[in-house]
Each structure stands twice: as C-alpha cells, then as structure tokens.
Amino acid sequence: MLIGVAIVMLHSWGDGSNHLLFNMLPGIAPDYNTTLDVDRDRAIIAGGGFSTWSYRYTYDVAIPVFNPWMEDLTLPKPDKYISSC
Image: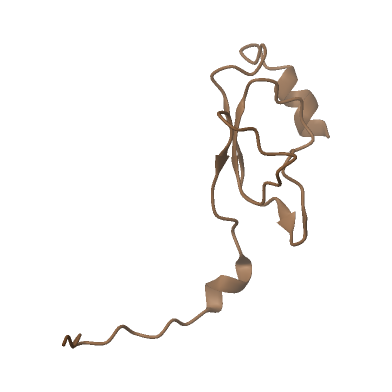
C-alpha cells in the first residue's frame, strides 16, 4: 500500500505512461496478487500469475513466476548421444 503512495508521488509518474513495473513475487499459488495494489493507470506491468481479470491485453507482459523451490531442483543431464532412425 505504501509503495502505491510513493509511486504516485513521483514527479515523472503522471498517468503512468512510459513506466514499467516489475512484479517478480506475486504471491503463492493459487492466491497470486498481480495488481500490486497501486494505481497503475497506463503503466505496463511485467509479472507472473496474471488472471484473466488482472491481465490487460496490449499493456501487460506475462513472465514466469519465481519459484524458490526450483533452486534445489536437480535436472537430469541430457544424453550424450542422440540416436535417430
């Protein structure tokens, strides 16, 4: 809530045009908070976890959601040789 007040008070904010807000940690599934609780007006939001109600076509950019559980994930090594028929 305080971040919204701080953003609106920026001299260059205006209606949010030419601004890009990143929402890298939108919450946890299934309770994503993609609105950032700020008056975004015409600012673009780059974030993950958008719903059909919060994603604005032609404005917002969907990016993958950061998942701290993935840090310890060990992926299998790719095969050294690929066979073909």
